[in-house]
Amino acid sequence: MAEKQTKFIFVTGGVVSGLGKGITAASLGRLLKCRGLKVASQKLDPYVNVDPGTMSPLQHGEVFVTDDGTETDLDLGHYERFIDENLNKYSNLTTGKVYWNVLNKERQGAYLGQTVQIIPHITNEIKSYIYNLASSTEADVVITEIGGTTGDIESQPFLEAIRQVGLEQGRDNCCYIHVVLVPYISGSDEYKSKPAQHSVKELQGMGVNPDIIILRADGSVGGDIRRKISTFCNVKPDCVIENRTLSNLYEAPLMLEQSGFSSVVCRELHLEAKEARLEDWKKMVEQIKNRTREVHIGLVGKYVKLHDAYLSVVEALNHAGYAQNAYIRIHWIDSENITKENVAQIFRGIHGIIVPGGFGNRGIEGMITAAEYARKNRIPYFGICLGMQIAVIEYARNEAGLPEAHSGEFDEQCRDKVIDFMPGQSDDIDKGGTLRLGNYPCVIQPGTQMEHCYQRSVIQERHRHRYELNNQYRELLTDAGLVISGTSPDGRLAETIELADHPFYIGVQFHPEFTSRPNRPHPLFQGFISAAFHENTKQEE
Image (cartoon, rainbow, N blue to C red):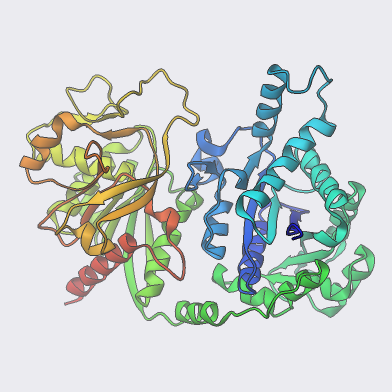
């Protein structure tokens, strides 16, 4: 029996960054999956960090975590949400990781004394990730996005690597998709094709000839522009496809398919696949468009100036809103601005408060004040990772008789460290890759809000943290009324907390936002938005 030939699709971008290469790649993944194909996705990032784990959320946005504990670029969240496939360690690769691996191999003598060079050693390392993703997932199609912009010096080894893949696998098994900007010039009232032409020329100069060109524009560029780009960029006319600005990103697969995107890709790759079945996706998009209710959520964080820092949280809130016919109106609240004097004013008209994850002591007291306000005023509260730790600190201070309670992360010298390092860890360790990362089981206690949301007794969720609820204070906290509603299977780690006499007050040490899907909202976000909607109804009465 002949070995299955995986097909490889490479998505590059030109002119400017932020064109939506990730959404294009994710949309194509959904379309191919709807044709019955098994799809795996991957992002190759040119920055020199080993992974995004230590990068500032204000600069890079959120860090997405896969089941196997790999810290990745936020685009992988788009991939998982669109194609509904769990990605792995081969799904994200940075320049830093490439060089890290190559240099370690050189030190270990793996190259047998060879002079280590960009070609073949660096490019071979890049190719190994592409091929390993194909073999580890047994995918029919691997979609690889190249981060950055064509022409950047940082991207050159990646572009050379994907050129070599085309040579090794055969052009019938590789498809190159190039996303370009087609700017609108208001003064002349027309779209301009020259930036796209120059970008394609740059890519061709590196030995990569695009098969499909995606035109990123705010509206339809017209047939003349598409024909011009087809002629000057040496691609078939139906391989020039528009990607227009949309009000909701989940419309993107449907919009791209109107131009026959997946059919063109299948033809270029000689893929035999059934017609795309998009009925469920269309139904979901219609549901999104026809919402009639509103729920106002206060998102309390320290990175609110860059909304991408909480991208998966926002998407998970929206997913729950879709299912409940509600627009989620997010109020971005900088925790540094919250005080006991203004907290009531800040949260006036807010139906639910969510405190997502984060690191460092900036804005912590404002978060604690927000958690106290939610608890005392019976406003639905959802604490994620840091948000759970905040709820524990607040409860310890105000209900358990520990006014100096804090986290060891924020005050090493504090009297009562109700949140502290996990057993076996210390402050001396490196910051990168030393967190509790990836999927872990959690046993849910019967009769709790957690059980009501999940309808299961054992769950699996993704983690990204270093600190835990300190077991030395566990009995004191529970005697004071705090409910530890979920633990590790051995009972050693407190995974979730809640309050029994509150409409919705849950803190979880894990990150449920990573596994929420637009057509399958996460049960905790569902529960939170449902409770918030009931709060909205009360306020209106």
